Length: 503
Image (cartoon, rainbow, N blue to C red; front, side, top):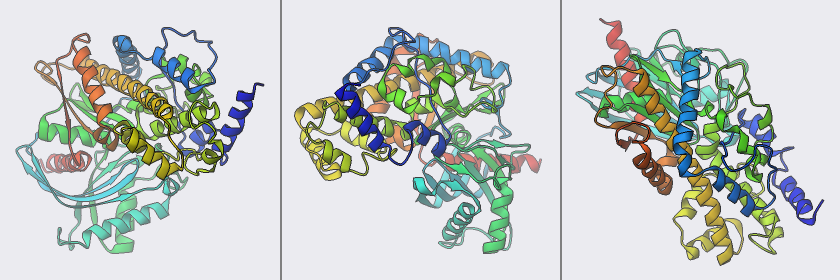
C-alpha cells in the first residue's frame, strides 16, 4: 500500500469515525443508496482513481452535455417500463382529483418536508388565486428525524402553536385540513393515507408504519388539544406542487428539489406521483469510476437494473443522489477529504483539517456551503474557510475547490435537466392534446431550497433545457418558482375533494 493510500485510509477512517463506512451511514441513516451515470469514455471495469483531480476528471468525462439526449432516452425508457409494468414503487397513480382552478375555501395545511415542518392557513379564492393567511415553519435537525409517536406529538404541538396566533376557524366545528407529506403513502381515497416508507434521512418507527396519517393527527389533536380536524386530503409534496402550479399557472409538471427530489404530472386524466428519485439505474456503471462515488456507494454492483420497479427491492435513489441537496453537501465534503489526504489542497494542514468536527462528520456539510462558495471570490472564500473550518486557503486550494464545485454542479444540472426532459417527453407521448396542451410551451413549477437559492445550479439547468428541448421534440420551457406551492397545492386538493363529495 502506497504512502498516499495509507494516508487515505487513515483520513477516511477519521472522517467517518461514527460509522464503519460512508455507505453504512447512507444506508442506516436514510435507507438510501445511489447510482451513477452511464459513461461513454470509461470502461465499466475501470478502477476508481485515488486523487481528487482524477475523480473530477472521471466525473467530467462521464457527464458531458453532448450526452444529454442519450440520458433523456435512457430515463424515458425507465419511465415507460415503470408505467407499462404497473410499478408499485414509481409512477404511482394518486387519488388526488384534478382541480378546475375555481375551487374556494379556507384550510389548515400541515406539511412535512425533508428538512422542515410547516403549518399554514390558506384561503383559496377561485379564478386561479390563493392567499396565505398565516403560517409557521420549523427546521428539523438530522438527529430529530425519527418518525414515532413523540414526533407526531411535537408536530401537533406546532399545529396548536399556529392556531393560537389568531382566530382562523370556528373551533366548535371540525377544521378543514389538508396534509402534504414528503414520503410515499398508500391510499384508497384522497383523504386517507397509510405511511409506507420514509427517505431523506428519516427513520420510521414500527408502530407508525402502516398507520393512517389523518387518523393519527386527528386523534392526537383531539386528545391533547381538544381540537377537531377534518382531514380532506393527503398528498405527496410533489403532487401538491403540481396542483398549486396547475391552479395558479396551468403548469404541466411540478418539481421538488431540496433535500430530496421528486416530480408529479398528469397522464391520461390521472395525476401521478413519479417518485422520480428512484429512477436512474441505467446510469449505474460509472459509479465505480471515481473515488467520491465509489466511497459513497460501494454496494452499487448489487443494485438491480430494474430496482425502481418493485417496492420489495432495496431502497436506492440514483437521481436524488446525483441532484439533491442532501448528497451534494456530502459529496463536497468527501471531495475535500480526498483532496486533503492527497495534499492537493490544504497542504501541511492535515492536523487542523482532522480537528474540524464538521469536516470529519458524515453529512456534516449541507449544500448551502456549495452555493455560498460558488458565488465567492478568493478573499471571501478565504474568510469562509478561516471562520468555519480554521483553514488557510491558498490560491491553488481555491482553484481546486472551485473545480470540485463546478464538476458536482454540472453533473447535477445535466442529470436534472435530462430528467425534466424525459418526464415532459413521457407526458407528451402518453397524453392526448385534450389532456395536456404542450403546443406552445412546457410549463414547470418548482419548489425547494436548493434550486431556488443555488443560482448557478438553476442557471445551468435553464441553459441545458433551452439548448436541448428541440432535440427531444418539445417546446421551450417556462420554469417558475412558486413559494409555498406544497402548501397551496394541498389546500387545492382538499377543496377539490370537498367539492366532489358535495356533488
